[in-house]
Length: 396
Length: 166
Image 1 (cartoon, rainbow over the protein chains, first blue to last red):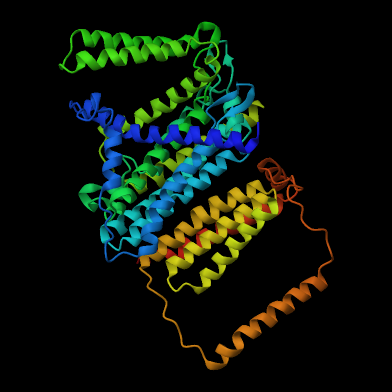
Image 2 (image 1 turned 90 degrees about the vertical axis):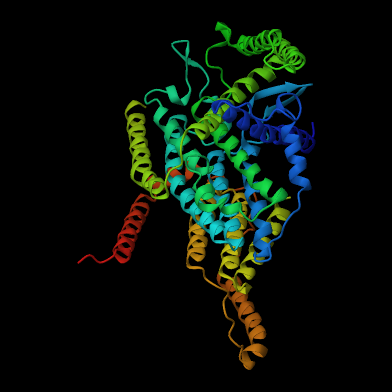
């Protein structure tokens, strides 16, 4: 098929799904935090609040877009564009699965693959800081400026340990292309231990994984490193002067960065779309079991509903889950859905950790944040890199 | 396609470069420089220097220019005050500039040997592996000397920035 047409179709599919994931990530975040804090979270709009993201989007679009009189207009408009553009570009080189054949067309799952993929991600994430810094500066407001300055300093500081943590598994995998990185982690030790980077011999990269996640939390400005928008000190930080869709773009950028960090962690450390145990032990049936289990849970709760509404909504969800389980048993769909399931399951678990941490940890103080980056994280990731390099040199 | 992309990114680089000089506010100038870096990275990519392109983005656009912007914001540098242009500069400036550029172009064309034009996609040695191999074999000594130079620069910066303790 024509290369341009194929790319266009794939882009439309990926962007469509990605935008919905970003919108629903916020719903999931609110639900998870609510349950951690023993609340129920959004449940007014649609069944179990499932239409809440739609309502939020309509609200944000139709809100009055205030232009404060004291801002620098050019950069005030430019900043949200920069933030959201550089946050969304990274998805273009993330591979979601192996090469597949759909209706006689062979294609890779994922938009494209660069032989400098990891470097590209680092470069793009480095450019994303301009959005936050410019927003803070152009708002001409001391709280916003403080937020912007904090964010630039924080992102420069945590980019170093992040890059060093990424370099360690690259020594084992010998490539910078994300697709080859994921393919290099296929297979199993002793027939059942996956050859993911975090289990890879001669030096399992579990420390790099943890270091990368910590730096990733700081790079995405998430709790406990969300100093740029610390409410109790800075009102709302760098986006205090923004309203309507411009405010929403900053939120979208934050969620898109979270997805990117999770996807990169999945690809580099957790083996991408490769299942956790081999096919011959029935790893293909894991999604079926999970969806059937969810369906049974729904039916069980519908039998003794906690709220009167649940009597009608939960059986519908149960049937939907059973349908999803059935999809994984169709032989034609199986090679497409299984890698996608493993990939999104791993990304989803890391995203859940992001939300979990937000619900449980307090925020760092600014001096603690900087001291942690330069006196703990940086030396530790350097030692980790040296150890990996030494062991790779000895054993290869 | 390659020539078209080259023209687009070259135009972006030149426009951003001119904008860098024309703008009076330091932040605008710094961001124009970021634009130049980005366009140069795209040009390196077109020429087959993948690693150089990525390094350009990571190091220059992503780290060094962020520090520049950071310092400009921290110092709260205001708009530059324009000096009055002297009358002879007003009338002779543009013709002299064109004359100078023309002479430079002529000299470069005379001195440099005629070479075949660059073919996009002909150069294959720009991958990270190739760069790393040549850095650690052929260019090992310059590479190490550069690292020592940077270390000296860092030490000098620390000495200069340190507060005197009596």
